[in-house]
Image (cartoon, rainbow, N blue to C red; front, side, top):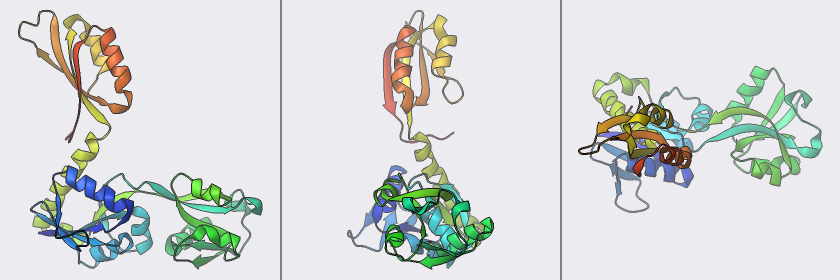
Length: 287
């Protein structure tokens, strides 16, 4: 039974639990504070801090893990990415006080003090930029540092940017884009049994991710409008067309479409004479 390290709390934990459950890997634990749980019948979940997951995987305590790309990079451990799980999207950004006069990295004077929870990434970034700075590691709440004289600039995670604006900070540039990733090690991949199990896991999770934002549309349309219908519902490889018993001039068309444009899709189908339009959610989608 492979061990998968999952975040033990926070939004990453909630999203990871939802994704695994939707993929048919129900999390069954002895209680809400349990440190381990079964994931379906083939995996075991280990619940640990998101920032510790790269270490657990790299050291072999877990065969794979789910955590943020920012935490993976900060750990410096050699891990192999199996999949971008798409949740927890954010960016690591450089920001300064609005009244500092800094608007770009070029405005930063040599020796600028930078407070951050990500000292490794920050040092590497400014080394690549050829800028001499002093990195001040902090354990949290980096946005307060410029206001109390600890640092002139911060490097911190940004989602919408509202926290920066509330604290009078201006974003100068992005260091990296982050989202949750499923990672493992080369040693685990070298084990054919474990590699096969992880490949199946990636397929299951990927099918759920592919289905999100999609809808399955079924409608009876006049046969002579099929070319126009194809443009409205192109599907993955073209719509599926099925003859209807006693359907006369109508045929059934089935297709996967974007949920974001479903309103327009339905309107366009109705304009082409479609009848019996049915839209359903998709649980999984395998390309």
